[in-house]
Length: 284
Image 1 (cartoon, rainbow, N blue to C red):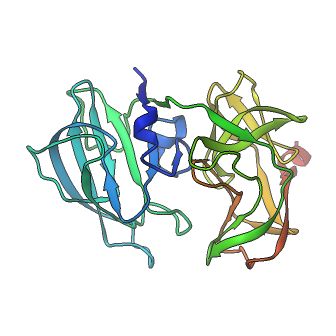
Image 2: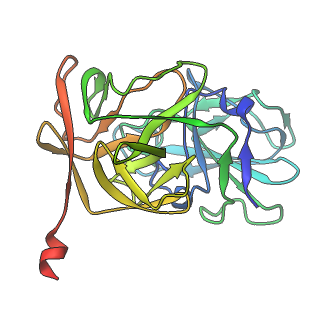
Image 3: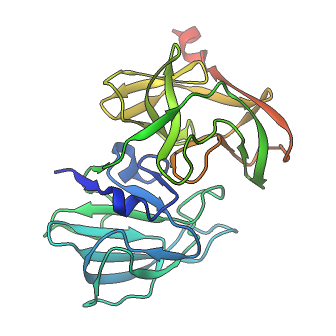
């Protein structure tokens, strides 16, 4: 069973990602992260709240001590939502768009990741508390692939990230877009995930290709919708960084470079390059 998130639900949020996370559920696109504007969490599902649970979060200087789980029976499935301090209680009924509570900045995600709702689904009767076992998730929207040559100017940033002015969203607010899987100038779907800092990524709206490439460089191999990254290093102006955050954005776009090593300021011109680690090939 695949759970498909409708267009109306997705349009509550300015960004989504199926793969850009270290959670196991994201490895095969069995969860989706939804990014709302503001500090509150509009519900992506309708149903009865079954339980809420507070859990210890990994200790991080930038993060709260605790995270929270909200379990909602949607009828066909049981939804699991994380990173929201619940304003709802067991027994309450919620509809799509209802306020679930305040977003929590949790130690489960990296410092460059904005606050968001982590959403996964289980078959009724299965354990909703385990981290693994979620159903595959799909989206009922076409995502526009954006060609990118690896260059841009920094227009925004923080201590561990910067956003470039390229590639540009073609229709801000009206559709979702992401960085294209660019195979020799031919766009075949949209890449999703943390390249290469998470164990793998995704290839959305593709034509069935098995190759993954970005900014003119091969980056991995696709098996269906899931991509295994090659051994790579991402560089910004020749300096190694943690990587590129790949996602689907609705309101604006621009490549996002991440990592504690990012030493760039607004106005800096950037050229991103990708180097393949050939150490293993040499040893063979």
